[in-house]
Image (cartoon, rainbow, N blue to C red; front, side):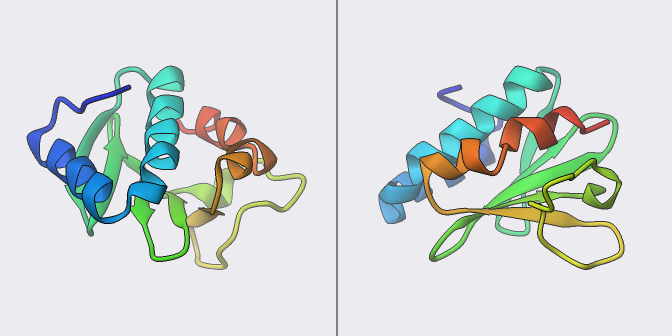
Length: 116
């Protein structure tokens, strides 16, 4: 998925390309995974990242200094037999991704498929 249909999301992607070019490929890969599994997903800029929703918000991607955080709104409900998800809040769980290898090693697709 190259470009976003949402103008503000596209501007954020452009800003990331300019200020964090080392994270752009990873960000775009994560968006590809989201839209592969949930093609009707809508995206918007919120909390400084890209929020994803279908009938309601289900997660988002946030570029940090040393990683990208993929947040899942109801991650507490996900099957996570290898205890990969991080976070101890009531509902939200996240993955910290530092490299393209983390996409497979942390099984991002497995968790994105669990989104309802």
